Length: 177
Length: 235
Image 1 (spheres, rainbow over the protein chains, first blue to last red):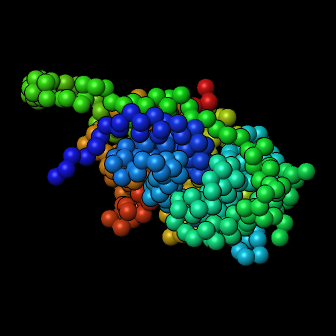
Image 2: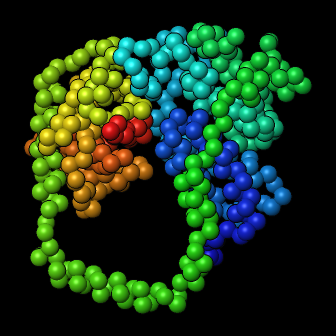
Image 3: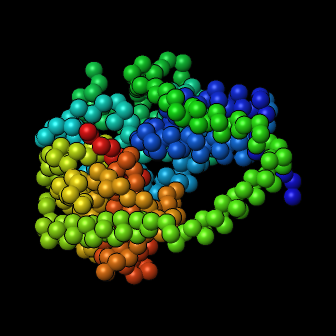
């Protein structure tokens, strides 16, 4: 049996560490929970290390790491994600978020003050992730498609619908000018 | 169409995301953990020099432990039994307290958190399988905490109790792997308990789901609650 590489070479390690902030940022928007995000990033690095021999030097490591992070998320964390799919028309009626941020004060409606982060949290993962990867992390549509394991056309459609949804949410809650 | 994917001009949402969406930096602790994981101590790369003596020492220690085990204080079972009794009492109280309309929970929860000194940053409010129906103060061995009560579709009550620590050691032999966690699972007097520690608090889920099938469902409920609820002491 060939020995499994357990120690990253210096170049791989340095490259991988450069992306820790971006990975943590995405993990936080996926899990919506600080400790879960840390677990997810740690597991991502553990897997990246385990499969470092599969990484092709010269390819884009950031996209590779994002792909591992998303796959890990789907494997271990998706159980809690039972979000409804976006209807073609836009926001589905009667949707209630599965996770609520505990209100800080008596009787206050947190929903009325929903900010951008929380609005983003209400978008299903398959729409939220391509939006973040393309528009926040600046990945190309081709890279996002590879991470999401779907055609570029699907990525474009999901980003478009995510924006529509986000726009509607922000408008509903008065979070946008 | 109000925007063009891949177009030259960023649309309103793109601008909003780039300008206003906070970018979270990895906490220092996470960075240290990842660096350590990627760069294990050099000694780990050539373990053969110290492996044999270390294993020998470990074997000696285990023999000594086995020899001394009968004389060691056996506090853990007592702690768990006391905790279990306290939890079962709280469960009975929660069940007999009756159902509270979930609509009142957003107002009740901050008061319960304030009274108990247990802060829930995130709360799992339910899904298609279980729903949160009640939140009330709880006490485990005289220490304050709170109890969230869920009800599943079959009408089973599941209480999730978080309390300031009675200093309970979770016995290794009772631990069971459930998803990414290893809580203790035990069945007593017709109730199932899942016990773990989180942020210095003792957390217990208890229900009357005891058969093999029911226990499987109870573990699923545990995963939902555990992964979606963040607790911390508020004092």
